Length: 262
Image (cartoon, rainbow, N blue to C red; front, top):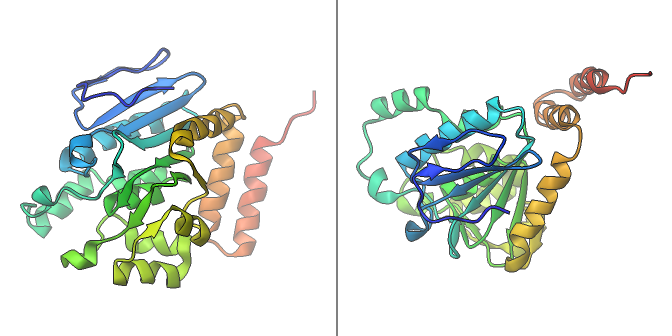
């Protein structure tokens, strides 16, 4: 399993793969058989989400999307204290005007890119999973958390609105009542509460987090990648369709992956 690393500027990608250099806030590693690991790498700042991290994750996700050798990708956080404790407020307070911000987002819309990734994404969550951290996790397909994980969207207490999809992704996972409870009150959930509410798929002891996620990733990677991608597409696209439309989508995708007689 890849190590969490310490601030290397060059992303080492195991063979077969590519080498992407110049990254400071993320580490990208690719292993056999087709598992990619993305590590948020600002442990000194609790992996706070910064402009540079946004840009580097955009490049990494673009590479994953275009790489057929990657069958599943795992997101995790460096250090012992946090997956990601939210946005870097020092940068946020000096952010450009709304007009400039919209132009930047139009060029590098990380969140829409997350939605377009055909491969399954797994979030390995520990420690603080707040603000942008929980929003990244919500864009992943599976969320596995350690017992020490703390989840929350503290934006309203700071006088701001979640800006990375939290108001849209959270209710799709928790339902309206659970989402509004967290969004309007700033309520934080521990691991067991997150499991009970359906925010995460599994809770494991801290020392078991990465081995558990690694095992899940390798199992997914062992299956036919076309079947896995089609299954993800059927569920996600079907959620925005009527039942009849969803059944038609499932039928069409099933036809694409039907075993052929020899």
